[in-house]
Length: 316
Ligand SMILES: *[C@@H]1O[C@H](CO)[C@@H](O)[C@H](O)[C@H]1NC(C)=O
Ligand SMILES: *[C@@H]1O[C@H](CO)[C@@H](O)[C@H](O)[C@H]1NC(C)=O
Image (spheres, rainbow, N blue to C red):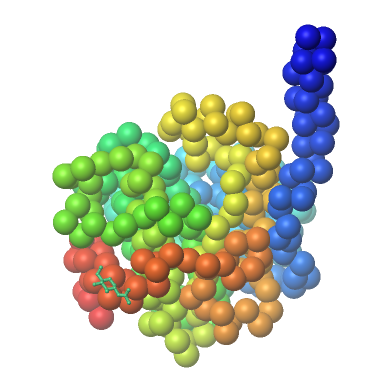
């Protein structure tokens, strides 16, 4: 009896004490590039919290001018101050970007193109996860709309600038969850059936398909593109789901810090010589396996065309 009680008491205590070590063990990927970024320009979406914030901080640390593209400008400004203080780099700027509204995306791109001559690194990091069924300003299902279509439009609007600034890179934050994803062309907006968990997976599959498709289209342009699984990270992504928040809390000892979660994004944004691996998916700073669906070029091309149509972009 006493033994059991002791165990019940000791086990969590031991776990708690060992947590930093366990985290380190589970998080093997570290971006070791020492490259510095003076004169380089970077945009990070969803940069006011979690992985996006850590990614932006590291890019600023290396001397880049970093744009925090955030829905909540006030929160963004606080984070920008913090990054400026920590890194000593004053070139950290906040711009309004609501990926759930194509008007906001177009306004962001227009202003950015007017004020900046270059764009070397675009990190499509923002995302929503498991939110209840809802629609964006343009009537897209929220996950597809924000995680996929919003970033697709943003990348499309900035692509010429990226080409002019080559060598340049696009990093898409996707997820291991893409393995459960499917592209249901007859139900793209979840109008026939909807599951918040699966909608997230579908949108993350779309991220990988598009990274591969864009890599194919950008061959020879000097712009390369990568998709990333950041790992299981303690972030605000789970804010929409109380179940997920519980699961996160239970396993919180094993979950990466945002700083650890940012490593693979940074690896793809910074590592010298990575260009030959353009279009690949990365996890723990290594090329990672993707599902057969994520490698299917027929689906990728069709989704590309459908996405163009939905956004009113001419297919090319
Ligand atoms: C991901 O990256 C590709 C190119 O890298 C881009 O076209 C696409 O819009 C990005 N976002 C999504 C959601 O796929
Ligand atoms: C790609 O997907 C299509 C449609 O789902 C399927 O018919 C085709 O067999 C797939 N191709 C490969 C190579 O898996």
